[in-house]
Image (cartoon, rainbow, N blue to C red; front, side):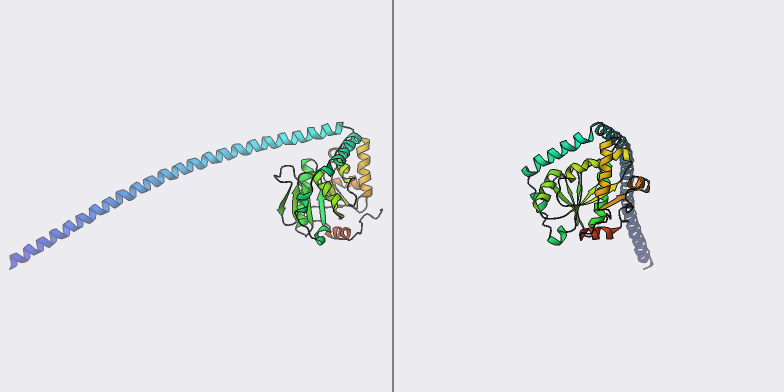
Length: 287
């Protein structure tokens, strides 16, 4: 009896040992697999980090290229302005005006009509015109702000795909001043025209009904140069404008003939003045 018990105990012990050995082998197999998985993850992590490093280097390279391109663009803009300053203002004005007059009847303004503005919206239309890059940027910032205040705003953009594109609520970009003029000739509205360059008067003078917002946004030598005729156009704009503003207090010196001129920055404007003009009350007390 005792021998049988010993035999059973030995057998059970062997079975337990075999079971433990099987479990150990299974654990070894799992451990090897997990170790291999960790190794693969480490390699993948190293590869990702290497790619991120390469991407960072590429981004830094692109940023340097962008900086170089921006310097080149700024230089080209200065050269363009210098070239324009060499062209007599009278010639530039007459050429532009003749072009607009000859072209506007032959273009289709339907791209503006498709916007479908209601009558109450047509009473609050603000438009900025073509200009140099810094003028377009300033105008688009002003238009973006005023569009949020329920004005319908159109600003010039050269590189949009369609003739007119909706940027945001009440805020549109257009790329053809000829189409703009054709549209304004075809409807009965009195838009507020934002002018920040004397060169824009060639188009401005062809818009029959309008309020004029004259905005000084840079140094005088960039805006009208050294020609006597372009300076006189600046003074003419000061006289006829319904509202005169400047982007920086440094430019106030160009508006001294207008006691009502004021600094105007996006989100920091005298909006009640625009409201008065919408209802026909000019801010120019000399008119």
